[in-house]
Image (tube, rainbow, N blue to C red; front, side):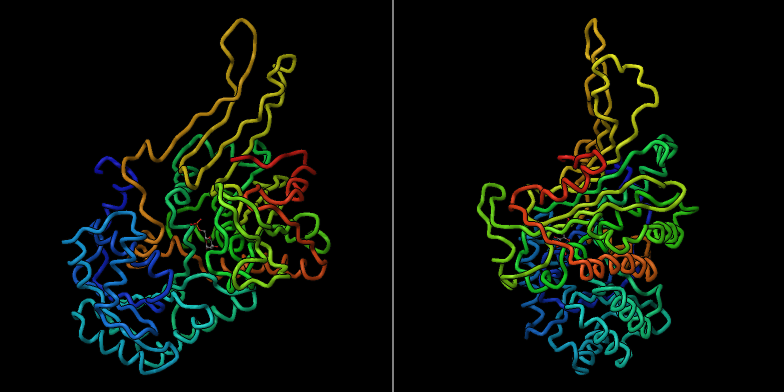
Length: 505
Ligand code: BG6
């Protein structure tokens, strides 16, 4: 839609240069659910250049046609827009497949062969996508180096996108950075955090820094506290093996939630340059007060779901999920009370919570403001009014709501809490693109603003590793919650100690 301002920004950009995208892990879930549908939608919107080529690489012995067939099914199932026959056929011609083991040098020779068959402009610029188990990231990078595929001939570019999880703790994240850097420079490395591709998350920057009215209030003088909620109603979705060794803190907080926190808390960057923005985010992460000693037990809550009912359907408990240890101590829920030790946020608690099998899927950031300094309406019922609150709704109902008090019509002073709302769905006719569409396009353009930088990942891990170590050392308990509830009672106690309650989004 021509009058959609968010789209106008994009349309001002050019199409990316011709390229070849090489997806390692092309037979996997991520490729089917996210990457192929995202590429198809980019093609529908006219974002892909001519020529371009997508080479899927996987162990299954598929032909090009078998890969195209899987892609068709994946798009039918997961694309936000239906498959159009003519457009699909034009798109499918760009898909190719190479079968092989990622550890085997021959696989890379075959990829090289396919590249030489591609049109020269497409072959010159290569985007590798590591959608493999993380243990293979260094292996594939090293093989790319040995085969020379990591080198461009000088007319194009070479970049690599790395999926999460990026490391398991600080040490492994550092080691991974080191091994990838042996092959690729930081400007070639695109570490995915798909939350950064969500429209509403990007809007946080626009909201804060393109408007004049919010930023003056955005500090400890006016803000009482911040609550960040990322609640999921789904369970493990067949990922028990991975999740058992991760848990909610690694799976959601180290990446997505700390990203949300840094965008909410960062200082205004001087420019929109990728590094200017990431510099400010890193400063926030560095200012997070580490939880030391017994503080982990005071300021964090670990939870695990038991059998219950979600959306009217009975679901098993965490320990009954496939590939989960029946005695598992892994947390499927975590709540945290964090502090940012800087001038802007001194004394403002940030409460974070995330969990699986909660009552419903909802992600939001709630900024609660302080009450007015003088209670002018104290003798009236206004004193009972809820404090002002700004809710940034990330999903599923994207938008913002500002809560304030208004006088109830009539001869007496009575104040009622009302909401002023902006909803994406009603203000912008176009449905928002999926996060992966935006992120793939940015990587094709070479814009790393929405990807996490080396230091950013390591600072986030340093903070999280401190908590993980504390949990071990101080035997932080695991509290159970019923699937379909809002988490363990201990999380309510955590926030109640500050005389507050979790918001019911
Ligand atoms: C992933 C986690 O990074 O994010 C999953 O590994 C989680 O466990 C998912 O379900 C949530 O993403 P979204 O976009 O559905 O909020």
